[in-house]
Amino acid sequence: MTGLSLVLPVLLFAEPAADLARYSKLDSEQRARPADPAITKAWLDEAARLATLAADLLEKRRYADAGTLLRATERPLGNAPSWNNLRGYVEFKLGNPKPALHYLQRAVQLDPGNEDYLLDIGEFLGTHQAHSEAVAFFEVAAKRMPQSPRVTFGLAIAYIMQNRRDEAQRLLEVLVNGNPRFEAAYKVLGECYEHSGEAERMVALGRSLQQVNARNPVGWYLEGAGRLLKGRIEAEPLAAAISALRTSVKLNPRDPRTHFVLAKAFQEAAALHDAIAELEKTIQLDPDHERAHYVIARLYQKTGNATAAQREFARHASIKQRDRTTEYRRLLIAIRQ
Image (cartoon, rainbow, N blue to C red):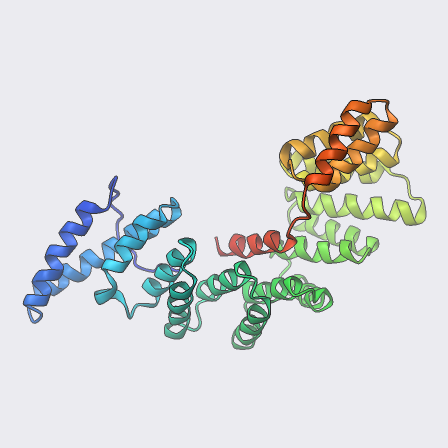
């Protein structure tokens, strides 16, 4: 959540009750003497301080406390776009979709050029699986702000959530070419290539990202996964794929996807014990990784561990297919922070 522009020193308290009592006294005084400039200034300053405190409470996920402070300050701050954005986002996190959308939309109406406010509405629409509405919203935003990488990225994510990957891919290719340091786009574009089996493009994109930032594990993942895919198509040796994937794992040892693909590379290289070790790490990091449970069950069968195989087949059967759109919605959150 990044929309708040009320820049004041934040004084933190354990609970907002004392702050509300202080503000309530000033609010009553201002209602009684609205023409008094000193009282009005103190009232506005205290309201702004509470809104800043609410933003800090939001970052700490104390949504109810943040909401209490914001509802109290609507009279002085209700026409401020940052307050409306903050109020809408808090209502969103509290599970109140109707007021959330009202305040988020009002923030955009008051400050239509603010990228953060646009992205907050995009996250809201995506979370509520209003994918058509998200596409329509981001298409308008992209026309209004054609030079904004984050808005273009948001539109690409909205297309993917609506299963319009070809359109997303074209947008992301333009985005990467024009903004090579916008690293989030490489990850999603790489997934588009992976989804359509474009191994050469995966490798090239991964190598490009390595040139931009050799510490980004996504670049090494894309090269490794692309080379693994090429190995299946062209019988390319697997050593280069395994090496790149190992680098990616070293840079980000907590990514279950990379451990899983490295396990597949080891499996195809007939290094079954290494494959099992990587699958065990995958499941440790992501206990509901459906495919990992199935693949490790098959490998346990091959290596003679029938009890473990039976356990993993049962676990695989109990896991529902995950909603991939949830992972894409997280990317909208990431580019706002």
